Length: 246
View 1 (cartoon, one colour):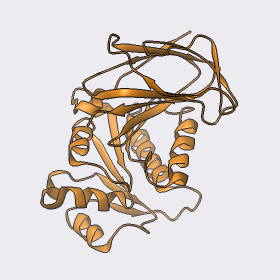
View 2 (cartoon, rainbow, N blue to C red; view 1 turned 30 degrees about the vertical axis):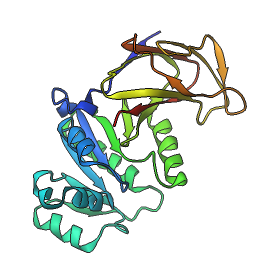
View 3 (cartoon, one colour; view 1 turned 120 degrees about the horizontal axis):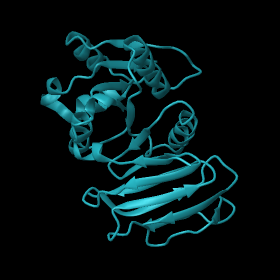
View 4 (cartoon, helix red, strand yellow; view 1 turned 120 degrees about the vertical axis):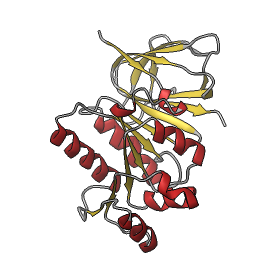
């Protein structure tokens, strides 16, 4: 069985693999510090509709320093002043009225079009937002990343509080940067009836343990500072989450 490797070096502003990563900014609050790290770690930057408002507001007078390659969505949230500002600087603002896709889905579609046109391998996708605010929007993020696992190699969702992604069925090794990640983590059986989990590198490890919403859910588990990696074996797809240090 293939061992899938994961790391979160993008949280530290790692530029060494930036060309292989894309950033999609959603319409949710975020800090300048997190934005700057993720921006440096990525080579293509897209705002999903009102995400452009967030980018503009958080940067203020520094807006020209971080210009996205694209703003896309149904544009029901994009403020007129923000639209005009970015258009004047040459940023494409694309209206897409497809009511069967969310703004996030439209941005992912735009990235896939870019990859096909350039004959480029897949980017890792970093989504800024999606795990906070309205519950229905959070559920959409959980659902959409669960579906994306069928066609995308790596998709992460990040807020100032958490980072999370889907671990597909199989074995995984997650490199843990304890200077960036906080103590708490979780293994969440979202979108499945149950899974059987085995872990190493956590404070409370599991061995062939059944996990489901009707039974045990490993929330508020802790990363073990004595270990630099976490091993997870799961029989079905799950969400892995870890808190970020302030």
